[in-house]
Image 1 (tube, rainbow, N blue to C red):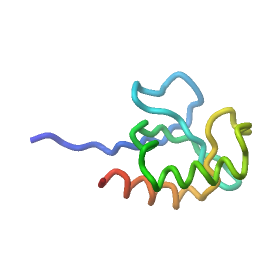
Image 2: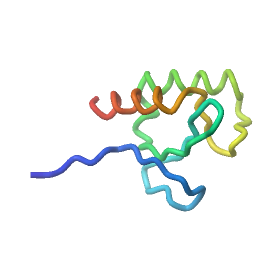
Image 3: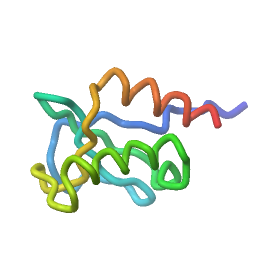
Length: 86
């Protein structure tokens, strides 16, 4: 029997540790946390909504140097846990 591991990884380091098929995003309203998530999330409508919000707030100049998602860490974790079940 295979064990299904969570597809979202919270990281504290900044570079060089993104596995193939994943990308890093920064999440948070005041203090940003770095998450490494699968690229398959890009095709999900829920995640695309977050990206649209990020585009409205930051355009394409993200202050952290990577994609910055303008929502709370708790909202992001809730949303990505729903994407893990799809």
